[in-house]
Length: 314
Image (cartoon, rainbow, N blue to C red):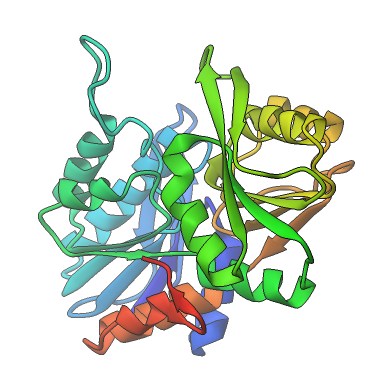
């Protein structure tokens, strides 16, 4: 077994290797002056079980192309099996044809991963679970929830209610509410554009309570910040947000700085520079991914990774 990393999230790849007691494989990834990516595998991979760790976070297209080229290099070097490890799967929001003449890009990316040489995919907290069905190869879909639950239990927040900031995240919020043994509420929203949303109503009782909003992904932080503003207006006390993938651009960072969110809890699935003026807690999923890689290599079950004290994530 050998692990390699693209350039999108090398710190996570190194942490995964450390968690399973391995060295990261040697691979040169550079760019030509015109922007083309060049990859050279610096060690023998013939007959090896290869894992390539690469989040498709911004710059999304560059990181995806880098992953495809790395897989092609491994395949042509006679690797026995190639597993694409995508802690964050980009393009997952384009999973259906909800307007005329638009693509289903999540399916296109699935096709390209297989065409480039992936024999298996390991990913975490997909935006839509049906994306697993876009592949004709095995997909191991992990959840960051067990890591989040451990942190939240240690905080021991009293009088807590779990809130889904939109209807789409209701299943995830329900799972958190069950394990943390709390009430559940939902914020109804209306999307104005790709960067703007409007929170219109709250279903559930939140007055005088501490609130935990849960979501799989935030980029512009529009959904979270507008929901938090409405929750505060309706009498919520402390407001925390729990998000698996925080891919924050300038708009999102600025909104969080001005928002009433007291703490943003996220993971290291995407590489992010330090952000001033926002209380962000980053939890590591390296141990979870490392354990999954060990079990996949030894052909053991990964089912128990979904189980934890008090329930299941799925």
